Length: 386
Image (cartoon, rainbow, N blue to C red; front, top):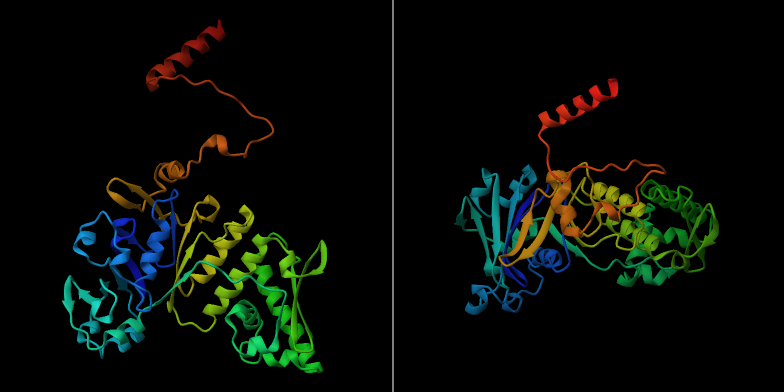
């Protein structure tokens, strides 16, 4: 099941908005205060465990004066056989329909409404239906990888060490991380194999340093995490740059999240990912987004042109805000990306991509008809021959 469209009415700064969602990656770009972050929060608020009240209502909408909550409508499509099998006991309509919409306009389960072909349908168990929809996950703060973690913190499921636990997961130790704490040959081999798998994964998505290596070392009941590359000996994650540490932590958490997930089980929302990264790192991050989108849809905001995969211009949504409220432009790539360049203030003079030598041309300020141009060149040629 995919999310194909989101409609938002009267949510914070958003008067009304329709956001088409790509089947894999949707990129929202635009100036500050244009409504990108509020759009992400509005989608997150569709969840039944997120606070939702008229305190979120847009103050220049009719809903505000009527004391009503905002309205969030999500369209779902591409139902699989498993989706239909899960939804069919809730309503016979799901046997044949290709898409349906769910509207939330209040804080309770009773405030969810299902529509097919613009007609509301009865559902026997709304709570169960919501549970069968893709899980919306908003990521704002990524827990950064620490230098070390003790056995008890991992075993007790301390959320402050979720990144370290997920690191072990991508190292093949999701079910038996205890083995690396054994003072035995088996424990040491398990630690070395996990280090190798983690290093292999990181090298695949971090092109800036192909010699990067992650090493897990255990001393008693404490796991130490070390990192090295071709220019340094092993040092700690906290001694690395913020950009790399964020990138590593992001990759660990997201890949671990999708390890055992079914296709389109999650719908990821990210606000300004890669803001601390070098442009080369941002390009690497777009590749990770592609990896994530193999199984789950991803929506993220950015101000950086390096976070846009130009092979898929149709994925970009230019968000702008004017007197008529927040607008979405799904064709920001037209006229050689002119709407996007204008939105982020990117001019040719801002670029540094110049050759060592160049040619400066003076062009006429007025347009000259093509016939006159040929006449001009012809007359010049005749003069040169005399």
